[in-house]
Image 1: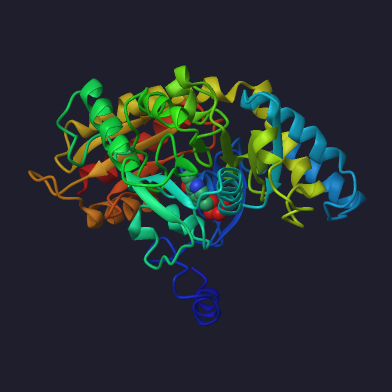
Image 2: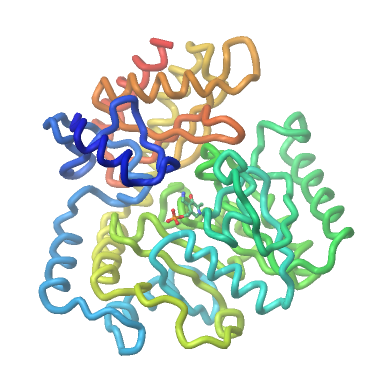
Length: 427
Ligand code: PMP
């Protein structure tokens, strides 16, 4: 490790900029599903940054598109016509399934959620918002105010009035013992109860699968049931697809489609993967909602030509190579394999997820207590074995997060699973 760089990092960057690993990593290059550190060590990457490398590292198609655009012009503004932005917006609008969709590009997921909250609160003339317990939507002034996962939002003085709803986590909390149908009914009653105590909220914001929260999700159909309650009252549904979009979950292109009967959300936010490492985020909403703002633009850098070029090339690759199908197939094998290992490791409480979004929750053996030390130990052991993974969770970061680039091969899935198996058995 480069100790000099770590020392400089610590002396000039904020203390709260947490680094993974006892010996933090400096990634110097990547290719496919692999990255290399400054010492020349190769790692199989099962986290892709934080799901930011959606297709593959250093994908030649994306590299070329970025290089070509950067070599021509880096003219950055929303004051002029921007062909790559229009091209990508058309594609994203079409893929969203939202009727009469408008797309606004941002540079991050936080900014996308800020914009969605700005739209919803303006459209509905209400600063009350519903959000899911344990959810994560960012740490800006408004997005932190709807981030229920307090482990990630210790300071929160938000301009929003937020009410937290049960349901994002299936296997913990007061309704965990119920079957799926009863669970959904209990969460709907909880939502109705909250609504009885408040002036009409603007929106419900929710991740279809909670990302930072440790890849947990409700039973399919929860958000369809919520939608009926919301629709009757004119409350908007914002689906935060920052982690779940673009086929990551295998069965669906968007995470919300697991709750399909409800139709598309009123507003969808996305970020992370579309730019394959370039900063592309955005908001999709029906024109009537998007156009409620009285603004000229709300971002200078959103939709820059070079990031749009990356998004276009990356999305084309994803669709041409059916990486959603690959996520379903390879992710399915990986989940099966990990469940078989988990059955023999008492620390593993649950292997969950779908597609290439897999969570492994660790507890102290024989108890239901979240074990974040075990999660850190597995993270270190996996790294020593040449594998990068992530971690997350509710009040404790006790879940391993596995979210490789969507082009992961079966051989690579097996190679990574073998390293994880050793790391888990070593606990
Ligand atoms: N929403 C979700 C679901 C996320 O996981 C994240 C990032 N972890 C964000 C929003 C915020 O995105 P960003 O870090 O790009 O601002």
